[in-house]
Figure: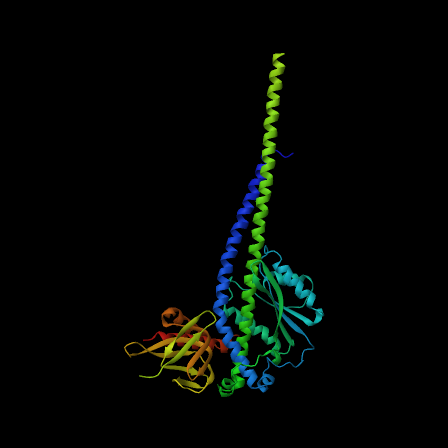
Length: 291
Length: 138
């Protein structure tokens, strides 16, 4: 049986860990709130961009064919690029592992996949397994901002316009709620015209004029749309990361609580045993003297 | 008194402005343009520019509302105008010193003709800083 001193030391160290996990949980909660705010604020912008793009595409099919970003010609032998969004740090439950496993399982041919990463964890995972790695982006702040997003989008979409790959995917973790997140693979380009909903207001569409012309406006607006999608996926992933970390840290705190309880029990037992033993020794000693 | 229409300015971070105005002036890639109520439907790509909106207060007086807008596009309908832009600033949000420094830096980069400078980026940076300075000038 461990001595009382040893048990006391362990209780102290577990309590220390518990304080850290508790603090981490609080930090994650605060960050999550902030990210949700950014997400909400971004919605009206993204929705308007998306609607405008849809109405241009619906108005003329030709501009889709003319656009280097939207056409679905196969030039690069069916190669695909994946933008994988993971965290830089661990201690977030299964957040990083789940998304990496999903992507690894869905890639059929290692040779035809190019992996572009945001976040160190995903990069380490796929480098170790010998995948073809593209560029790596670091996001310094805990909130995604449009400057950084457009940097990512520019070089990611360049893969398509330059004909290095045919398809672009975004691999991110969709945020459902704080305890449930879903790793998702989203096809970014080419956009299939069937997926574009028919605009509700047809009269608006036919009356609309474009300056300079449809092609130019579309050329401008498609990257904005992609930025919006990437921004949204980044925000969702960040929210998921914090959510996963929150849950993980919450259960870690609960676990620590349990261990402390168990150890306290052991400590009390050891202390009691110690006192009993001492008493017995004194009584026995006294009895021996009387004789 | 001129008739008013709804102006909405949306950026990724916030809805910046939504209010009735009587006229807006901005610069598209094709040139400057003013929009009054009842304009034909139009979608136009705009350049970095100072965006003017004329608002009419309760006493019927016109005010010129200025802001710096950096690229985006504008959707004009007969009864409303929606401006979608990645970045827009009110004059009071602009730091004049920073804008001046940015302008000088961009000019320096353009003048240096170094082979590794991204000319387009430097030009855009120059445009942006000059628009900012124009917006804060009274």
